[in-house]
Amino acid sequence: MITANQYLMVGAILFAIGVLGFLTRRNIIVLLMCIELMINGAGLAFVSFCRQMGSLEGQVFVLFAMVIAAVEIAVGLSIILLVFRNRATLDADEMESLKW
Amino acid sequence: MEIIFPAVNIASIAPQLIVATFAILALLVEVFSKSSRLVFATCLVGLFVAFALSFMQWGRGIPYENSLVAVDNYTTFFNALFAIVAIITMLLSLGYVDNTGIDTGKYYPLILFATLGMMLLVSSMDLLLMFLSLELLSISMYVLVGSQRDRWVSSEAAIKYILTGAFASGFLLFGIALVYGATGTISFTKLESLLSGLTGEGLPLLKMGVLLMMVGLGFKIAMVPFHMWAPDVYEGAPTPITGFLSTGSKIAAFALILRLFNNPFNHLFSDWVGILWILAVLSMTIGNVAALLQKNVKRMLAYSSIAHVGYLLVAFIALSTRAMEAVVLYFTLYAIMGLTAFGCITSLTSGEKERLKQEDYTSLGYTQPVQAVILSVCLLSLAGIPLTAGFIGKFYLFSSAVDAGYVGLAVIAVLNSAVSLYYYLGLMLRMYALPGRFAPVEVPVGSPVGKIVLLLLGFSILALGIYPSPLVGVVKGAVTALSAL
Image 1 (cartoon, helix red, strand yellow):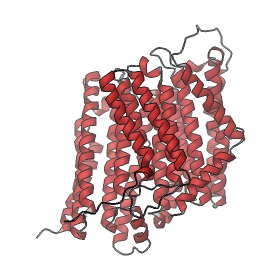
Image 2 (cartoon, chains in turn blue, yellow; image 1 turned 45 degrees about the horizontal axis):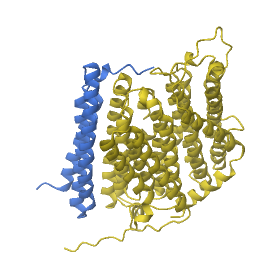
Image 3 (cartoon, one colour; image 1 turned 60 degrees about the vertical axis):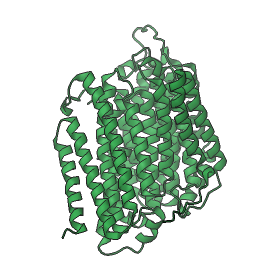
Image 4 (cartoon, helix red, strand yellow; image 1 turned 90 degrees about the vertical axis):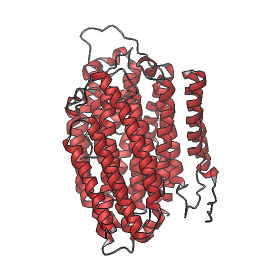
């Protein structure tokens, strides 16, 4: 029997994988994917808390968070397109004209 | 299943509704008429109406036991402030946007959407509305930062901003999930009553949640150690948007933190004093020392704005009514100073060339006397020289910290102000250095409207430095609403 706590653990692990991936990867599309992982980990945590407590607010929150994640990805991808058109690269290490 | 509709008082959120309506209207105008002047006019009218409505709402708080939006003097004050910040940003953008390849039809409505996000963020009484309005603000800002499509620095700033910003929102969302898991509610009023009695196993979860939320919000206010994005984004963004970002967006997130720690998370604040003490010192020191080393003026002002977050944290740690007043007063004064500084850089743009390097400002006082005088007043005010608004702001901030017993912190803050004098005055002296030879005068593109706005801003810096009491009175009224809950 899978308990709500186990779902919570999966959510936390997803979030942690997202954070680690964001900090170690270089390709900016992969960075956006890592952010998606973080948001989905948080979503899973919300749903499992809902299950534990039998309240609905968390589920509503997840629906909104999914929309926000989609919007972020839409804007993010269009900015990536802009970057690619300007420089033809997706490597985060090459975004270095602004530094001191 | 019966659904009970809540009683909605639409008039109570009229300023926010007006901003939203006019933003959508401006987008429609853009589609049907293609006239950027008409879009500009629509947006400006919307902001003026919103300002007038929030002016009329002053002093008429509405009780909000079950509502998502707090309508009190605190909200109303910030609604008016954000409307003014947006109006000034729009007026300063005139002339600049047409010369630097920005699509004006989207630019002005996006400023309105960002303003709506700020207004709702400060008024939210619920974690859901807080998250949504923060995202509305951030996503509009990502697009605005990248709106100079032909300039590489603008795109680079946008990609850096969206990656760090979305990363921070991930932390915020997970933090909210943990807070919800520990308490079972997302409403600020319920959180406050639950938190006073919370013990046992929910408490570590809640503390972890608040920590993650503060990581997310710390990114938005560019507090050390979450400040890395700020200099890059401020440097690359279109200059009027840099001003908007460093004032509006930062103030909105900070004002929300004030509300969070005054109402729902008040019981947890004692855990945070030590951490915030260190973060305040780090923000001030790193901001000021890094600003000393900058060759680019926008980047220098970016680091100085990180230092100003540190000054705000100095008073925030006290969390007394007096300290809250000092912080809210400084928000207002900093909004004026930030907009003036970046506004001067905007209006000194000639053609596509901006004056960004320190060298570009040598002997500027002889070729562009008006902007040079206004920028000098603004720099003196940012440094905190008496008879300017910045001095009044810093005086209130540091004295409220001393009152609360944080003398050491106040001393560090004053020493930091002394360090900051070096780079502010350095730029000012450079502007009035005697020229070896007179360079040919370049005609800046800044519109006359922008110049008039800058003159008014410069005048208000001096006026508030000499006679601040009316503003202090209004700020007192706003803060009373915050602590009255």
